[in-house]
Image (cartoon, rainbow, N blue to C red; front, side, top):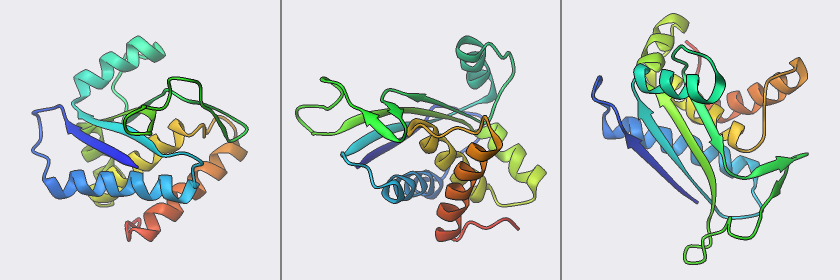
Length: 162
């Protein structure tokens, strides 16, 4: 399993511990999902302006959001549809996709919800990974499943709602 966290914004200084926490949350989520293949993904930390541009281009919504996921492997009924070329011949890793997190939104939401910035970054990382794995929250049932997994991962990391 390989996860890279990139700080692609200059608005707020991001300590290495925060990047490690984001990586750990994503790894734990992937570990709990017990993938049948080795995977890699990238997480980019951006500013509101960057995520708003992506949100407008890909979702038609002209406002900043907290997290976007861009999956490269389709999951049907929880099963990955790995195609030839999805697995890197040298590393034997399948690239799941990209997660984009707005640092500004994460800070804003941590304050609104009254919990730590660490919990918010952990939540957004796990939320993004679950979207890469085919989870969604379009129905109440799907939301309950997805949010239950998120809480399980965050609680295991000691990232509780305060």
